[in-house]
Amino acid sequence: MGASLTVGVEVAGDGLGRLDVGVAGIAGLAGQLETAGVTYWVIGADRGEANDVTVEGLDPSLLATIAARHTSHLGLVVAAAAHRDHPYNLARRLVSVDHAAHGRVGWLALDFDHSIALNATTDTWTGADLDAAHTDDAVVAVRALWRTWPLDSVVGDLDTGVFSDVSRIRRADVHNAYDIAGPLNVPGSVQGDLPVWRQAGSARGSVAGAADHLIVEDGGPIPVTGKVVVRLRSAGSIGASLERIAGRPEVSGVLLRLAPSELDHVLHEVLAAARKRGLLGDRGTGTLREQLGVPVPVAPDLTHNPTVFETVPNPGGRL
Image (cartoon, rainbow, N blue to C red):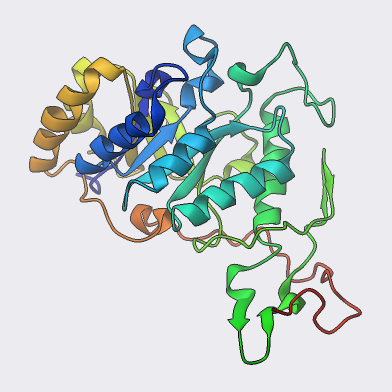
């Protein structure tokens, strides 16, 4: 048998109805998932699929921010597309939520967000088609921006009055479908980078390698490289599927797509039984990367990119 599986959960419609759920509803769902030992909640995943559930609703990053304040261990994976949002806005928003969650946030990079389409079929900023190649470029840009201002460059030295060592803040210098100089105006994550999920088969080889997890539909072909999570959409067969999937060493986890009405049974009976059989791993502690056992990728390397403040010793770095 392979290694014990991690468990991600997607809740259709996020189990929250429409716009009147309130903080209590969001906190309650997040707490239910955390108590059940779920590794991470993927928020807004069905926005990437054409259905009437995503016609309206709260933004996944807002849900994640609220959930972060009411949980301690649950990973929060925000589904978002570079559709209406520029990669700079995505990078800033995601890492800001990650700061609120103390390093427990990830990104499911969608090719298309049906809930914010507004009849747009191309990128608002570049005019590019909203396809996998476009998302590849966005992922590269966001990853570079996350590395422009390293978190450990923030020293907060009260004696010298230095807030940050600005000699370590570098330009992103992204030149693909987007031209982005950078840097990001928010320090990076305690995780190094937020982990990124992509749908398997949607990204080109070089960029697929940059994704921390590739999602494969149950029964679909398993990629030769990359960490794979298998999406299960049938609640009635989860127990048998876990038994089958746990025997595959190339699969690191499962992603359960559940209807709100299925949550109680799956979380408290099916997963509990699977954990007793050793099919599921115990949830770890620390950042989401640490819980998943996924190291920060080497690329992109900004070492040779120009520093942002080249001519002044420490502008803007003073307290």
